[in-house]
Amino acid sequence: MRFRDKLIRFMYGRNGFDKLGRFLFIVYFILVICQWIVALFVPPIVSFITSCLIILLVFYIFFRAFSRNLVKRQAENYRYIQFSSKIKTFFSLQKSKFRDRKTHVYKKCPRCKAVLRLKKIKGKHRAVCPRCGNSFDVKV
Image 1 (spheres, helix red, strand yellow):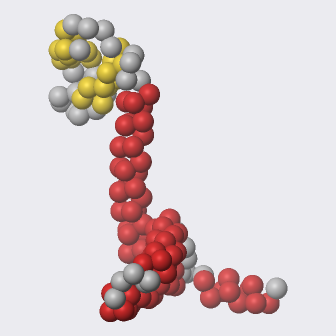
Image 2 (tube, rainbow, N blue to C red):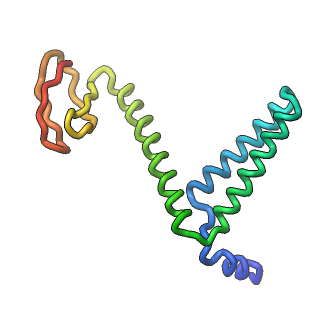
Image 3 (tube, rainbow, N blue to C red):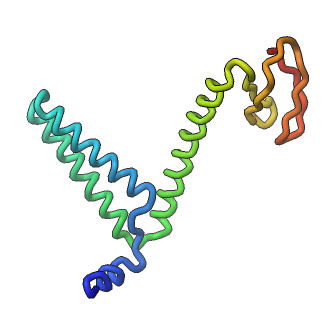
C-alpha cells in the first residue's frame, strides 16, 4: 500500500493517460508488431529508422502522461476527440445510408448543411430542415 500512495502522490497534478494517450499506446503496439513482421523483408536501415520512430513515440507517450502542463495536454486531447468524432460520425452515416438504401434517401440542407433522412418516394418534393427551418425542393 505504501508504493501505491507514493505513486498517487507522484501522479498528482500530472496528465496521466487520457484518450489520446491510449490511442498512441495502441498505435505503438501496432507499429511494434508491424516492425517485427516487416523487419524480415526490408533493409536494416529501414528497420533502424522505424525503431527510432517507435522510440520517439514512446517518449512522447510518457512525456504526455507525466506532463504537468495540463492545459496544453487537455487541448491536445480535445482536438483528438473532435477529430475522432468526425471520423466516427462519417462512418456511422455511411452505415445508415447503406442500411436504409432501399427505403430512404439522404440529402443535405443547402443552408445549414444538416443531413436529412427522407422517404424514398419518386418525384419532386418539398423538404423542411428541422434544424434551421429552411424549406427546399428535393428530387428523388
